[in-house]
Length: 328
Ligand code: NAD
Ligand code: UDP
Image (cartoon, rainbow, N blue to C red; front, side):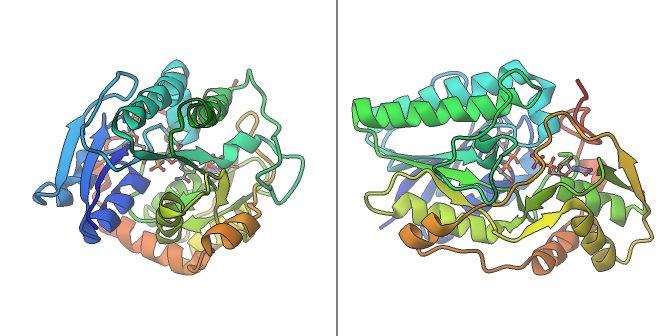
């Protein structure tokens, strides 16, 4: 049955893919976004659809949309350079934004999913990371505005659930990539592809031996839908690709697939950059029957194709930190 679904951050990378999927399934989508880290070009394909509504709004301020069945709370700067540009605003977006969206869920009876993150594990002492691991976060570091903001949002979700009976879902998302990433978001996949296509040097922060696990966006969106529609399961649940890779390995794959002549150059490792990140997805497999199906090279090829068609001049960087997040 068709539902009325709010997506905060619906103009962003993940939000645009979720919108396409939900509209394609016959739902009505209401996007709430202030376009801080995204471009209206990303939502342009949806505007003609009568089942799509766009509300330009900052979720730090309260808002109630009526007759809502589901809310996906995705609004938050996600790339390190973006969330460190205005850290106080990042905390407000995570914490006040969560309170406002949980308020909407309470007023409407909607089920609400929080886009949490592997960053709640900080620089983890165990690998792979399981949901029961409580994390190792520096509460006063440059990444804390994001990490602690997301941790506080998880707290709010569970307290609203216990105190007010709100139906919640919490997804801990690991690094995800694909078309519709902002070319100047400063994240590693977009940086490497943009640099390779422009024939520029590829910037390796630190020695490149740190790891991440890269999930293709269609796999992640499938996980979102399964989690939101699962019965009697709040999470938190890890959603990510369990294949762990070094950043050097990623760079070599991008160079190989683009045929670029780029050189690798070293830049300082940003403070508190996690050394390892890899999800244990046993819980997602058990509760949602979910696991990724798209391998890294297939996903990278689709993303490279998307970037090849972009005119980078039409995508002004949302913050000055697209080459690297700030140092302490
Ligand atoms: P994105 O930057 O592309 O999208 C975020 C969207 O939220 C943008 O459209 C931005 O304009 C909007 N936004 C930011 N602050 C807002 C505010 N105060 N009010 C209204 N809109 C606001 O990032 P993304 O990769 O699509 O991430 C979406 C969500 O998923 C974020 O909450 C992020 O923390 C989470 N997440 C993403 C990843 C990933 O690898 N992509 C990993 C972990 C968690
Ligand atoms: N990174 C890099 N070069 C870049 C951008 C990022 O080596 O141009 C590294 C970064 O230091 C981190 C990893 O790639 O170790 C992933 O960075 P990203 O900003 O994509 O996300 P994070 O997982 O750190 O939030």
